[in-house]
Each structure stands twice: as structure tokens, then as C-alpha cells.
Length: 445
Picture 1 (cartoon, rainbow, N blue to C red):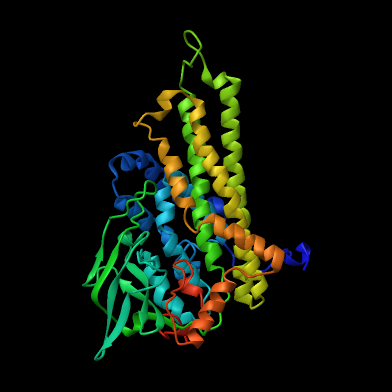
Picture 2 (picture 1 turned 30 degrees about the vertical axis):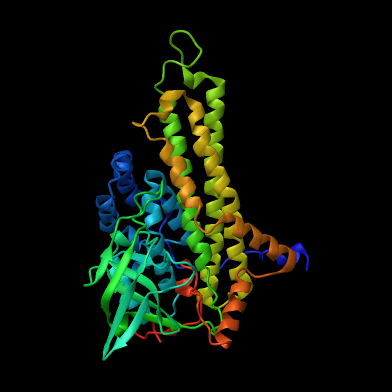
């Protein structure tokens, strides 16, 4: 197989629903982003969870920006959503990151053809509801120990999740659990009796994403809140869920790069002295400082351009799915684009967050500025879905035509045939990983 055979197919234009102009959307949300940015440093210094800022986004309808206008949403395309997430990430990278599960879950609902799915979820989200994910666990092996069990005519959820990004701010929690050997996805009202959300995330970056523990202690689950059931024997469903989830992180990183450029400029412009130069001086006129700012601007531009390119590929796959013209090759090619972008954007942004300190001396390290937060946040966001594993998958794809995760799929099938099922899906992959046996109320029939 040649490299040319593996190249993603050329994008053909697909008719899309009429979307608002980006400037129209941006004018609606930029005042909110500006309010968020104004207090971002203060929140970081105090480690103050941004409940108020999340409330501003909720009130502005940002969580519904992808929902069609006919349902009261913003009607944004995927490239528009990710451009907005970059701008939000510039204001505060915690905010764009903590909405990752919300928008991923919503994307799955948008892609579903049954109107009952839309009618169940869209009004809730238009009214301000936010969705959080509770998928991963701190266990000795990859898997799920959370359980869903039947007691009489009631369903009971028990278990503990970690890395529950955004769940502490959410109205609904989507969790992956086991019912016997069957994997199940459930939607849980965040305030249901028995649900506990803890702010115990101890990462050195993205400290305000609420990525801590979610506990379920005999939580009653209504039958209509069992979203789907699936097993390892089900064939994989085509989707761009992995690419979407990765791109939210890359948009967050691109937003950090914009914040680095912003803070570098604001640091340099008012300064009247520089190391090694007697008396007053103008660092903004120094060719070396100008070179640093030029490099920061270029790194930011490159990161944002790459994100925009992958967002365009996602939009193409989404529209192809709606028109029934998508196939596995298109979805795999889209995943590969996101994986390739991951390899480059991470390095661009980490370079920018370090280079920033070359615009000034020791004063740039002041705790009053907390410029180190940009590196800490970027390094933490970049640690999701390890890039080295994705890089290997890219190489295997181009060298051998191996579809990413093919080995896991084969192992799942082998275990299922042997009656063994101890491997749960990756947290990022659960919502659209396998063919669904759908709940008619939530997901259609």
C-alpha cells in the first residue's frame, strides 16, 4: 500500500444548514470571554473554582451554540465552535477544557438521526443544562468497576470515578458502568441523591477544571436515563468522537498560545528599562525582544491554523454522516488528522510558553503575574491521550494500513468469544464506540 493510497480523500463540498456568520457569533460571546479573562489571574492565584464564569457561559447560551437555530440554539458549524473555544481558551484555558465532555456528548446527539433524541436533550441544553463526563477510574487496570444493578423494578448505580472533568459544574453526568458483563452508558442528574462530586483534582495545571472524583452511592437511575447498552461483540460504530475530543484539547492549547502572546505584549509595552542597558530604555524597540514577540505570534498563528484545519475535516465528516455518504475510511482519516495535529500543536504551544520569559528578566517570574500558569496548563492539557501512543498509531497506519485501536477491537472480540470481558472502553471513546442498542426516549429507536 502506498502513502498516496492512505492519504485522506479530497474534500468535496457538502451542502450544510445555514449557519450564522462567525463575526455574529463572536460578538455575542466576546463580552462574556472578556469578563472571564478579567478575573482569570485572580482565580488562578486563589485556586478559586470558576462557578461564576461557568454561569456566565450558561446564561449566554454558549453550551447550546451547536444546537440548530430551529431548537433555539446558535446553529454554529464545527469550525465556528472550535474558533470560539480557542477564544475562550485564551480568556481562561480551564473553561474551554471543562466543557469538553459537554460538547462531545452534544455532538453525539447532533449526529443521531432520530428526532426524539433531539427533543429530549436539546431543550434542556438550550435552557442552560451542562453535561459532564464520569468515565475513568483509578484502578489497577483499565476498566470499569462502577455497576448498574436491578433491584425489583429499580436500577441502582454504585461506583467511583476520577478525572471527571467539568462534572462539578454540570447538571447531568454521563457515566460508563457495567451491568453484569454488559457495558452501559447512563445519564445521571448531578443533584440526584447519592451523587457526590469532589474537588480533589491535584494536577499542577488546569487546576480549575474540576477533574476530580465523582461518587455514586446507590443512586436510583430511571429506565429512560439508561442511554445505551453494548458489548465487545458489537461492531465498531463509525464516528469522529476521538478526533473531536482531541481537538477540544488542541483548541485549548491554541487558546493558551494566544494568551501567551497577549501577556508577552502587555509585559513589554510599558517597560522603560532592560538588563544591561544604563538608564531608561525602550524594550519594545529592542530587535531581540521584537524577535521574541514575532516568534510567539507565529507559534500562535500556526497552532490556531492547524486546529482550524482539523475542525474543517470534522465538519466534512459530520455533514457526510448526515447525508449517508460517510464511510469508515473517512472517519479513520479524520482521526489521523487529529492525531497528526496533536504531535505538532503540543510542541508549538510548549515552546511558546517557555519562550515567553525571554521578553524580560526576573520580573517576568513574579507571582503577581503567574505567567508560569501558561506552561503548567499547556503541559497538563497536552498530557491527555499520550502523544507518543498516537504517534506510533500514525506510523502503523501509514506503514501497514492499521486502523487505530484495531488491536483493542480484536482483543475485545477474542475476550467476548471466550466469555471474558474485563476491559472497558477508553473514557474518550465510550459514547460512540460501539453499535448501539438504543433507549427509545433518549436516543431514538
